[in-house]
Image (cartoon, rainbow over all chains, first blue to last red; front, top):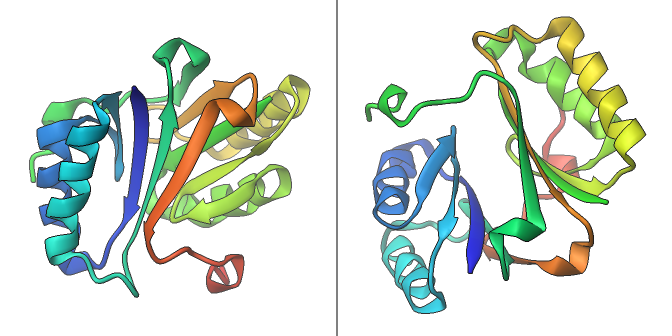
Length: 87
Length: 87
C-alpha cells in the first residue's frame, strides 16, 4: 500500500522521528513522508516510534491508500531534495 | 475531490499560509490540512498563495484523491484540535 505520513513531535524527538521514518519511507517535505510500505513494516515503524513518542504531546497521522495511482501529487513552489535535509 | 495539503514556508509567511488554508480546508496538524474542495476553489487557494509565496523557498504539496474513502486516516498519539492553533 501507499502511505503519506505526517508527524508533529516535540522538538527533542524530531530528529529521532526523521531518522526512523527515513528507514521506511521517502522524505518529501519538512515532517512529511510518503511511499510504498507493507502493513507489517508500517506496524514496525509505529512500534519503533512508540519507544520515544510522548503520546500526550506528539502526533503522527498516516493516510493509507490501496494504490499510489489513486492519489495525484502536485508540488507548488520548490521541490525539496533529500540532500537538503542533512539532520 | 478530497485533498491533503502540506506546506513548508519561510517563517515570515507561515501565518499567512495558515490563515489562507483555513479558508478552504480543515487544519489537522502543524502545516497539514485536509478536506473536500472543488478544483476551482483549489486553484483560488493557489492563486492567493502565489501572491506571497517565494517560489524558490516555499513548498506546497497537494495530494488529490477522487474520494475520501480511498484514503484511510490513522492518528497515533494526540489528535490536534483546531483551538490549539490560535495563530
